Image (cartoon, rainbow over all chains, first blue to last red):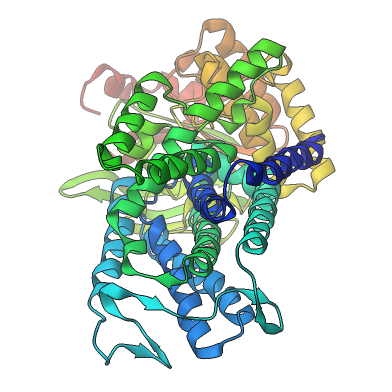
Length: 341
Length: 238
């Protein structure tokens, strides 16, 4: 870890903690909780895309898989500790297997994007087609379009009757986001993270220096899958129902938009993008004059045209220029032309 | 006589109906500096890529220190202690010079040793003024030096260089010659090169490729005086 990196991580976490403490004064816990969950989901793609250079169109697959794994396990087990762990482990393992197939298969970025998108849509179609009584896992009916309702939501570990909801669920989600953010920052400051950024910049050079690029990308992809799974698990507890919509094309696209608008190559950017656009969607949902997809699309176009690096990097650069500190170039986002090719 | 560290036996590489490398037997001994030369399309770069794992040969064997490495991925070859520099500088553009060198050093050294290796390379290649600049902002010659510093930070015992002097000014070529002679004090080298003046300055022994096969393999002065070599460079049939 570079000198001063630990201090920088603690400082960022402290700022985040202050924001998370103050936000309940201006917003309801119920809305805030889901925004924090979105922030974590944005962070998961921000890691694999912004720092690993892996454009995954299917981050929603891991999110939905986490939510469904939690719900199915919660129906069968009851107490939420094991379901909570399964909600992280199952999508992580799935990402590990999917990533290994893609990276060891030496697929180009285009095919990688297509495969991750197709996998998500397969989940979407499959879950929609599980309405019959034949589709059960243990005591859990998958429920097709209607999803799975009525499972045990998060409880205090070991006390199934002591549910975590409203302000307590918000605290759990906020602490989880802070911890995940800190862990990801630490990961990126570690040799593994720094080499991952090197791989993003030039895979061939990393390979010629003796790094097994495929193994490292697979591992990073699985970490992203685990974080998205955690977000899905928390979402399942917040929503108290999981439906195939979690795997939808719209959900996948939204996560990408959050990252682009917030700013790739930072961790705060995707979190900010997710929270800001999630809140905007919530506000737009309260009116019927304008379709919120049009507004989101318009924001995306405006940001790409006017702030191509995203909102957070632009603000950060402005701040450092004003106060005379040099911009840290190593956090440069993956070049968009690389990912679009 | 010193030990053979790189050997190919009957190495061939075909692309469809085109034979780029044709049944090449090659040997390099410990501490040796060998230049591979030949006109465009002679097969030297393809041969180089077969050695580095960037291409899997159609036929034949590659052995490094007695271990068969045919079909190895580049990272496995690099892990044998082989440093590889490509024709077009292959560097991590968005990272600083120091970060590029550190990524190489940290794979083989402990954290404190890696920091020392970075400092050593930055001093050796005169990169101090640009150590904290991102590589995408550097001139071609500087990028060549950064790549070489990155390769050498892992302390390889065998260095494979593809056209290290390409696109450099006369002054830079002179500096590169000195660097290569310095590298050769600790490592064996195989260098693919076109620049005859550069080759005269660095090489003892030269292997000439022509139409995918080895035409001549001898001391540099004898090779450059060889009529067949002059003919193939002038486009006459050897």
